[in-house]
Image 1 (cartoon, one colour):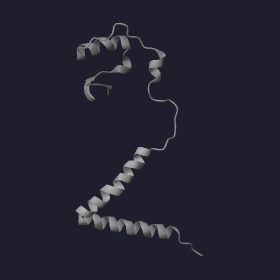
Image 2: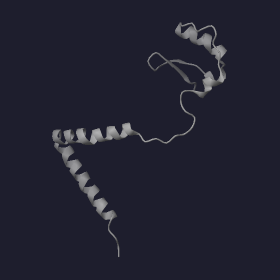
Image 3: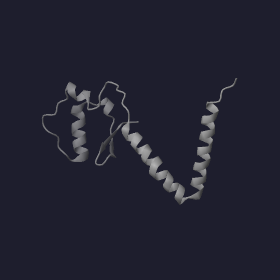
Image 4: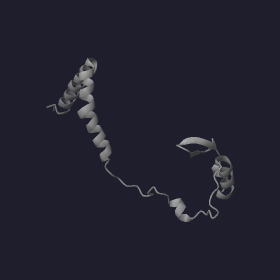
Length: 110
């Protein structure tokens, strides 16, 4: 399956096998598909392959995930529980099961 070239709002515009082509042969084809003429001095350098994404793996804490999870727990779950009685019942059962599991994990067999 050929890679897709995505233009205009992240929609698949054309299906072109870019793995077998060079930049010089791809430019006229894209100009023909889109109607846009490229700059005359197009050249590919080593810095183009570095890209905006870092190549070294870094481990970071995702604060946005924590914030969205807290928002879900603090606002959305109580709203759902007040709006739908079955959701309240399911949340109560889940809470009971979680407390039983937490208590079972701390029991010691002597």
